[in-house]
Length: 326
Image (cartoon, one colour):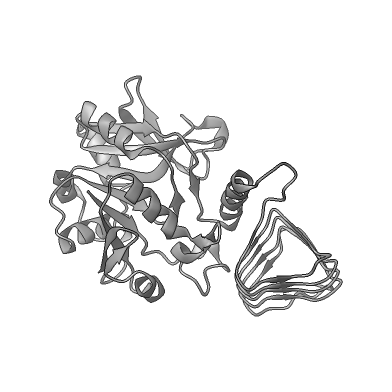
């Protein structure tokens, strides 16, 4: 089975973390985010992955060139200009010569559901399109699907207010396509979520909503990226009382420093007595001795001088230094 991973975006919502890394290469549990998708796809019977790449995705193309990776055939396909999800899918199908049913994944999601069960539901309902749907506490940041009692999708609402959302079933960024509907994607740079999906429903085509089980996350923002890593760290902890963090290769953390529910990428330093809580520190970030940070998002090479007390939710851009006086 073929899978298309949409990785053409620039990861602007994840800035400053993506200023020097493609969003699919940011570390999740100390591994590139996309490697988790590869692992899940292989375990669920997919053998060929088409990477729908944008024009400025050279780092991702270099990391995963055409060939075999983890038992998967990797086929990079480049966009000639910005195509959005619809144009990217159509271009990938044509360039990779996909002739049968296929799967599409957004490149900034983490999924664990049983694909074969979703395919079985797709076939049972004779759907042309099946959308994986994740139950969320707050649907307001997501596109939401409305389904009937049989699981058939009857409508969509984009980012509804929490109080008036018609459901809590968020578009999980994983879609099963029948090949024949690709021709119904409008020409140009269009989003299938706003064009193809609602048009299929209006025209009476069977669109199935499959409610998924297991861990799911959209890591498109620093806050959601951090929450996924914390969840995975807690799962991997070998006993109660463990602090849910990931510390990347080459980091130097002083013995009296405290790292709590945080993600440190590569080559960072945390000085004696420093406290880092619920923060994301990109490559080579330096936290000085005695500094206290809580909710910090720091780009590559940022510096927090010793003794600093950094307010919650501070963002440091790559190469910048925090100044206590603001």
